[in-house]
Length: 165
Image (cartoon, rainbow, N blue to C red; front, side, top):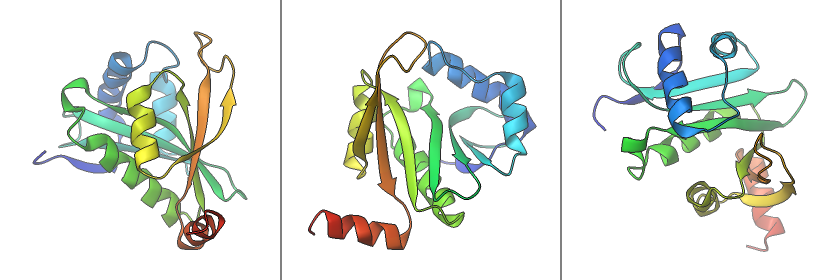
């Protein structure tokens, strides 16, 4: 995807993120006001896969951080329908892991709809392991599966030792 870079979102990207959310999620979407607030919050990293600010947003990720916690949370990730299968989701996820590690977080956690097989396959192929299940987690009462992956060097080595590798 020439010209598409992953970068921090700005105000000009919000409408594109909202359009992507409308295309990707039936419910549980972020409000415009929330997105604008998240752009400048030190406890969030809202990143977009896009060209110029205000241009089309091809994908985005939102990672949340809590002070004093070694865990970062991938709150949301989405890729435009026409871009799916081209590796952009993989790039956004790798970027989210790097952002979490840069902020000295040891683990990236996420929840995914239990019926979202493509996302589950992606997460598992990239080394995420399921650590739980939440019944009726989403607005439509669909269960969520919880996954995590070590993202810092020390945590990756500890996970490898636990697996006996």
